[in-house]
Every structure is written in C-alpha cells, then in structure tokens.
Image (cartoon, rainbow, N blue to C red):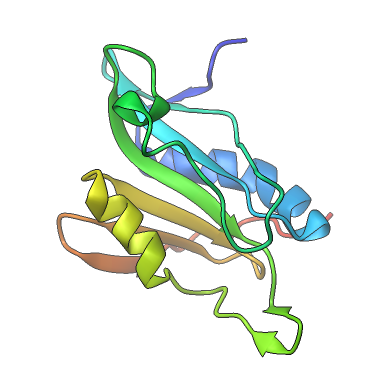
Length: 140
C-alpha cells in the first residue's frame, strides 16, 4: 500500500495524527512515525508503536530516519495520550525536552497530537513550538 501523500508538512501531520489519536488515547499507548519529502510531495509513514505509555521510537536513528532511499526526512509525529502515570501528572500538552532533542538531533521538525486534541508543531529553524489552530479528534 502506498503511503498517503500531501502538499505540506502541516497537512500530512494533521491527517496522520487525526487518524491515530483516538486509538492512542483509548489504548493509552504512544504512536508515531516520520514525514518525508519525495518528488515535491510530503508522505506520512504509517504509525508505529512499541506499546509504551510515554515513549515511541519513530525510527530517527535508522539510516535516512527510516525513510525510503532518495527521500528527505522532514519531520516526525507522535501522540501524547495520557494525563498521568500512577500518581504523577504528565505534561501532555507540551513538547518535552526529549521530544525537541529528537528533532534537533536529526535536523527535522516535530508534531504532536495530545490527549485533549491539541495539535502542536515544533519548528526547528525557529526553535519554537506553535499551537496549531486545528483540533484533532481525540474520541469517537
């Protein structure tokens, strides 16, 4: 099956996160993946998970960030599906320092979809997090 293709990173990230966030919230498991450019279009890899509540390996350490040969890794996306673990409250509506470090380590942007449907974008060039206007579906 061919990867979905888009004309912008924001569009690709929104589409893939909007599709997976409900599953992520319901299962309380993080999902994520890579967004890459090939032939002037943006493609979203299918979401992956290691069935952890607060982390997901999106493949950024693999050759070419796990993206197809000849493509350019542009961003990674992931979910923040839980409010707390045990008695520790989580900060689900922010990019963690670790999230930002992943993006910086491979010179790509990052997106996150959160428990309450917030859609965030970390722009590595501006080194700034933006709250996007669109909201993600977080329940059925």
